[in-house]
Length: 370
Image (cartoon, rainbow, N blue to C red; front, side, top):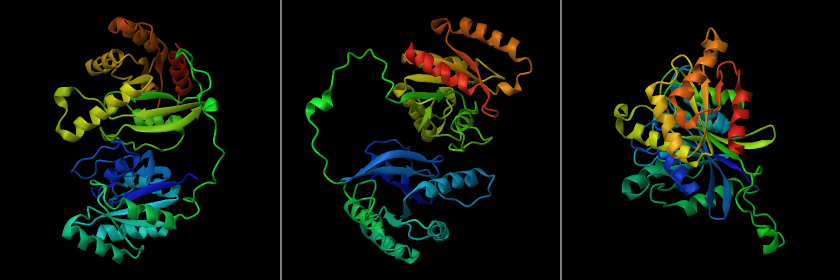
């Protein structure tokens, strides 16, 4: 039976490292700098014979509801609400802090099974810090090292104890013959509507990518705000549209290479480009008030060189005073500036009002079929 676990804790205690360890891939960005993770990220985890959904969350920090840290905390609280159990992680090398104790009370009030993880517990300093975790009053802590993969057997036992019904193995099913598994071979030309269509949304910072995807989903799933560069990880989200399964990816805003500063932004850019490579359709989202900047054209060129189906979205269309004339002008400009993809769909949308979203999704379906 499937279940969901949320990893909660202060910034820089190793939540994303454990997330990557359990999903078996480096999906979440990891760096020594605190506060790398901002949105919540979901993945399919495996621990021994257990398979479950794991949710990585932003580091818990105090802040007002309207501040960036407050909006990040709201995303974490949403993850707690949807989870069947919680991994509450502390840094064993630092020991318990007042922030750990404060947020332990938040986790306790959630009324969910909690497993305390004392991460970075390797060495004598880590051992003493792990013992401090008893002081949270949330049960016996599990000492582990997410980076080195130590203590996972103890985590497995703690998870079975915390969720005995959900972790019970299903009864043995009759063995299915290989003929049923293999079926008829495909020649690779059919359009398989049973598989999720994968599309990524890319663009410059502050083009409104996360706001647009939240509007498509009908919930505040992705962190948004006036600050540029909020999104860092490429976040994949599953949903359905008119009965078709879709997996869409929100990505970090791509700036000119010369303007990219620091290791963290380079990692975020690499993650966005990786999302482009694994997508079948890429929506390049432009700010309709300042469209076809040089960086927009560079991003479109990257997408076409990767051989991906392209859709251009003109966001913030609600700010355009004479929309019909402007759309004709921008479509002509797109054909002139981008002769290599002449005739590609150019769809006006508004992440703020939701206008044009059905046309955008229909265009994604259409270019995918082509």
